[in-house]
Length: 151
Ligand SMILES: [Cu+2]
Image 1: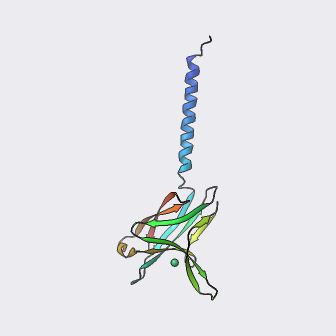
Image 2 (image 1 turned 180 degrees about the horizontal axis):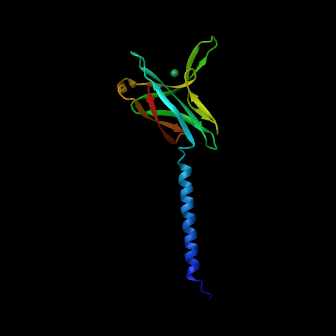
Image 3 (image 1 turned 180 degrees about the vertical axis):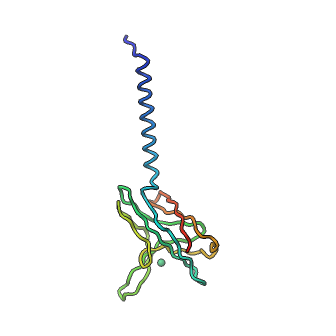
């Protein structure tokens, strides 16, 4: 019976280890998608005196190779809903709830005045803060943290 030299095992063990390390590293960078979905300039206009509703804006850019769907935004102790503004038949600006919005690969969507926006109820208690931490839900399972500036 031919004996396999010990060096053969050592060399292949190292190759295996190296392969394992590379695959683990590439795996972790794939699941950490924070650089692939970018939220620009998230801010909330505080409610006017005597009003309960604040409005939030941001720009969401998708640099992934696949489309993504934004379906929810959560902020602690606040009631947040996605809305869109549009002109009705009588040319009057109205708002409608937005269940979810798809952002194609390589494109972005702006939540801005006169268009999509967040309606936020319950901010009166946070008037002293200058920012709030929220979470955007992407593809129903991915919770993306976002810090909104309060203006
Ligand atoms: Cu609205």
